[in-house]
Image (cartoon, rainbow, N blue to C red; front, side):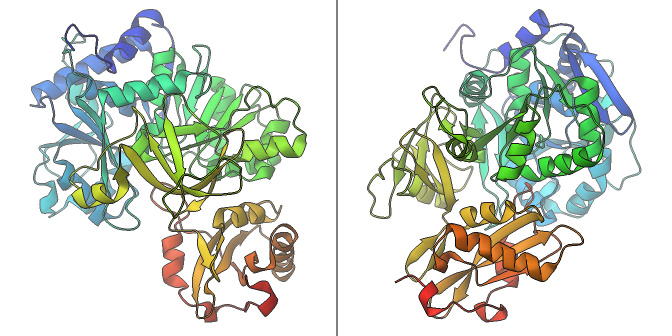
Length: 550
């Protein structure tokens, strides 16, 4: 569409610079707290655009980041896509072979890297032909540490001397603007490209009250990594709103987060449940003023009810959000909709624990094993299929996955869900994680939520282990708090499950471990446990005859 009227990211930057010039961007770095305004941010973003152009970056090229959450990383979020290049955020927690595959598959031209992550990148890049296409490495600092990499520049030198004005091109809304890869725990990572329009549409969706409802008065701190699906789009939506940004930097501790909330007046923050469990434990044992905080957005996995109640008792709303890399990423948010004001406490909490209502602009259906749509009754479940302007229609250079995962414009998510009469979605399981025992389904997610409701449980996950007679049986893996009676805890946990579910849902064993393995995106990595515990005979329990499904 001619005339610069396409839906692109550039107007969000323009609006923030012109209408909120003095609003702050605050960043915790290895040198301490750094802060500046939208005016200064816009100038530095233009300098970055000029520097990349001088370095030979052209429209359509991919520029990668290997970074934590900070202001320089934020500058790439606009500096790269608004010149027509593609921002490719790489997860530094991935194994070297996955990083190598991703860099080669994406054909990255420049890689921006944090000083603390330089050794990790060196390990993947040294003598790796997959990195032959990378022309330059830019260290996100004002100096370059000792490194074995060639063609290395520090960020401040890279942009220094370049003009703070840039002749931003008029881009098509179909121009690729971003790229992320799935974590690849079941095979090679799959690349997802985001067009300008997809990121624009996602920003507009999340700005609505039915999305995240960010206002210009808000102070937003994304703890979810910026390398994980663009920090759930928060750098874009916060800018579009003209709100204040707070970036917590590398590996923030619960104390770091509490201090930033108190000192910067954070009102909205977002991350996976393990982050907030750590903050909750810190707040229980330390004096910290988090009274400014209004909303905690949780995604990645379900939040324990005890945590929801803890924060809500402090006047902090806990919002479940669900999404996928393939969806830019947010798809649903657990707001309480009109007409539910009369719910009792139990009914209210049930809504809060769901993945919520689809954000405006998305359309979905639930498909059963028979290929037919599943009714919205909160009981029947099937696979979630979804489509909309933020949902990708293909994986990058993966025709095999495209044939399997897309149909009639829908993404087949692999999430097994139920929808209640009010439209609230509840994830029963991932298709690969649901446990089939004696011909009946057991939801590992529901069992995990029940186990984590116990006060002495820090983490819990459940997998299905092959069983000679029953096909699979559930085994629970629990990280207990320190100093508890382990034998008594096992008995109490099994009793919790027995109180809520049929006998055949009760795990055959509760295995106490020091830590649940995590994927590169911080989710529980059940694949590791399945590989370690591949035989039901390894465990204490054996399914009694009356505990198996008929």
